[in-house]
Length: 87
View 1: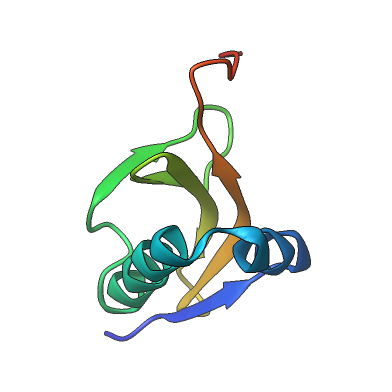
View 2: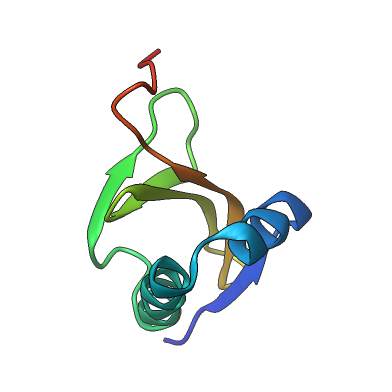
């Protein structure tokens, strides 16, 4: 099954700000998500039934998997640094 990957406006805006090499890696990861949304280093986010996080180097891609529609909605793309606090 092929999935449709869509980017929310916040994710699109952040994607444009990502440096070139990292943008290529994120783009490749999003392409892999079209074939299999559970591929790669992903973790289910607690407390949210459809929310997932994929790690791509220092970047985190936050997304929802909508099974009924065959859509992977990318909600946000964030950079993880050593000063990022854990909640």
